[in-house]
Length: 205
Image 1 (cartoon, rainbow, N blue to C red):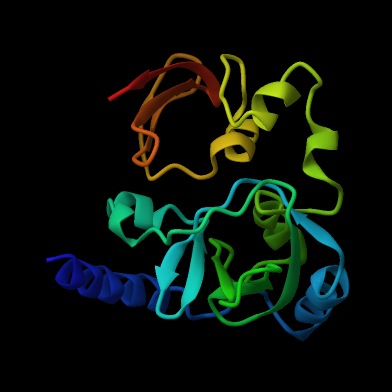
Image 2 (image 1 turned 135 degrees about the horizontal axis):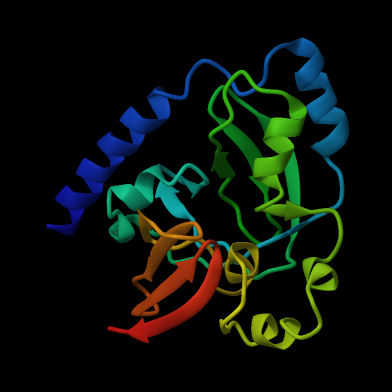
């Protein structure tokens, strides 16, 4: 049953990624700027990463497409801690490509940016990579929670990513001050609630 599920999810992955085939950046000058800015530069992971399996490689989905598919079964048995060295090695039409020491498979970062500028792509990649050790950029009051991989009321989205990584599933409805979101982390058996991007509560399930 699991093999059939993985096969089905693999087909869905291929279909989703095929929709991102027009190219990430607008042209050669933007690609050259990307390479100068990122490739082989010393970087750190800016979140906890638990990638999806993608054939023999790993996939980091910044589009939310896989969360919408409820594809938790395809999570790889790999967790990359916050602040781990990471090297950007290039890009193709759909992904930014990265290597992480200690992991043989290539990491593919699926982004929303299509025919965009370097600034567009940099905004997305800032969720995944940082030029500085990321904990140095966190409010001192929040830092101990992230170091213990915990969440706290008042955390913003980026701080949750640093502590728990990307959620497996997100639901959102309009609220008076902004979106009311529920983030589900299957492996942690937790529902996390955010009001306009700020953590308000969580519960075990």
